[in-house]
Each structure stands twice: as structure tokens, then as C-alpha cells.
Image 1 (cartoon, rainbow, N blue to C red):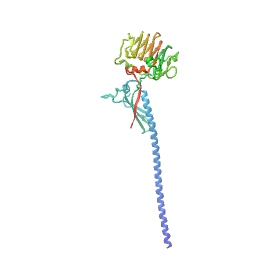
Image 2 (cartoon, rainbow, N blue to C red; image 1 turned 180 degrees about the horizontal axis):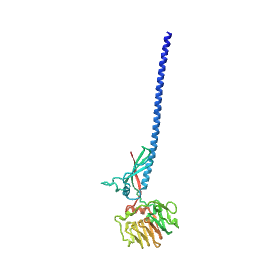
Image 3 (cartoon, rainbow, N blue to C red; image 1 turned 90 degrees about the vertical axis):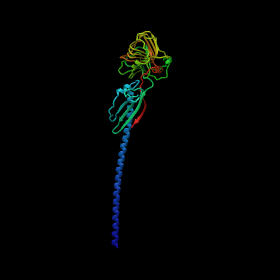
Image 4 (tube, helix red, strand yellow; image 1 turned 180 degrees about the vertical axis):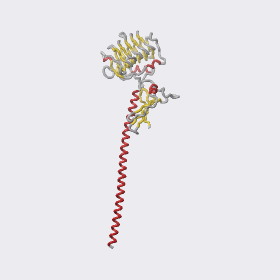
Length: 356
């Protein structure tokens, strides 16, 4: 009896030991599986965090790329020249870079992808992070409502003389007061020059006033106003016989002079005066609006030039002011001119969406 009982207890102990071993092995397998699962979860979480981080960085890069692309567009009317200059598909961006594509917004039938007819176009940005991260933006780009004149005198060339009797004032003036009283528009620079354009030493730097320091001079890429030469409905006087009146503020007009213009007497006007050549003032020119000279402006020692609005001049020597007068900025006068003929304006983003 005793021997049989002992044998039974040994068998039970062996069964218990085998069950414990199996349980331990299962526990180890489960623990190992859990460790692998947690390790994979941790790796996936780190990868997802990296992708999210790189995605956010690529998004900011895409926004910066859009801002840079739009800021680099020159002031103008339509976007046809920009579409032609950027025709074709750009190369795919490298990691940490972006690529920009300009496209027409299908504004005519049949559609010409290089012709803009409604002052709208599409800008697509692809920004690349570390593979496989990529963000895409599409923006509708149009023109700002206000024409682009960064200075009271916006020049596409240098300055040879600027006497103390001639003033450039970027503080906004009211057109109905001849710019003698402040207006409600923003203050511009007294003078805007392109990079590298000459500026003489000023004996009276306070004569160029506006935003910034003294003298108030900014360096900006000037707009191109040569399209005004073909303005429809423009009055076209002979260069040798400038009329006494070139419009009034009550009845402004676009005046286009083909060639050089000499102001020997007293001439007043309002609206837009565009001269495809050189303007030489030995008498007096008093104008409200925009005066533009593709061949530069010269004010002789006997001359006086008074503008309430904006002056634009191109040529190697865009301004030679040895006489007297003033150019005072006026938002009202520029707006009046813009109602007569399209004037260049900066590009601006109208709407943005993300492409997936």
C-alpha cells in the first residue's frame, strides 16, 4: 500500500512539473512576442513622428517657395510674359528644395497656355523632404488693385543732378489740393532706383523725403510702362507743338508723345502723360497723375516740373534735375490715372489649396 501511494504522488509531481515547463515556455514566447510587438510599435511611432516632422517642414518649405515665386514676379499687367518665360516642366525638386510651375487658368477658348487674358494664373509648388515626403500647393495668383510705384519718382536708370530746388516727396498728398495737404494713402520712398543705378552726392539730402532714412531712397526693380505707348484712345500731340493743356482733373486724358518732348512754355495736364523719348523742361510743366518718359527727364536751370502723383523715367540717365519743382506722391492721382489705362501692379496670392 505504501509503495503504490508513493508512486502516485511522484507521477502527480512529474505532471505538475511538465505543466509548469509548458506554461513557462508559453509565457516566454508571449513575452518575446510582446517585446517584438512593442519594439515594432516603437519603430513605427518613430518613423511616423519623423514623417510628420518632415511633412511639416516640407509644408513650410512649400509656403516659402510660393512666397518667393510670387515676390519674384515683376510688376505688370497680364502674366503672358511670365508664362512664356517659364514654359515647360521644371525638374523634380531635390530633398530640401522646391520646384515652381506657372500655368494659365484656361481663360479663353480655344485655350492658349501662354496667353493670359484675365490677369490670373496658377502657380504650383512641389516641396520635397527626405523620401518619401512631398507637399504640393496650388495658388491662384492675380494682381494687386493698386499700381506699383514704390517712390514718388520711380526710376529705371540713374540720376545725374538733383539740385536743392527740386524736391521728391513720398508722403501721400491729396490730389484736390495739388498735393499741398496730406492724403490718406501710404507713404512711399521719395525716390526708387534699380540696383546699380547712379545717385549723385546730395547737398540737401532732406529734399528726398518719405519712408526710411534721409535721403529716402529705395532700391526696387521698376515696373515697365512702355505698353502705354499703344494706349487706345490716347491724344497724340506733335512733339514740336505741345498743347497748353493736357487734360484736367475733371476731364483727365491719356497723352502719348511719339518721340522727344520739349516743354518750352507753360503746360498743365491731368491723367497720364507718356513720352516714348526724352522730356526736356525749360519752361513749366504742372501735372496731376502719372508722367512717364522712356528716354529720361531733364529739367533745365530755367525749368520747373511739378507733379502730384508719380514720375516714372527710364534710360541710362533717368533724371537730370538742374531746375526747380517737386514730385509729390498721391494715391488719388495714381488711381485716377489707373482708370484711364492699365498700369503695372504687383502679383499677389488670391487663393491657395493643397494638392494630394
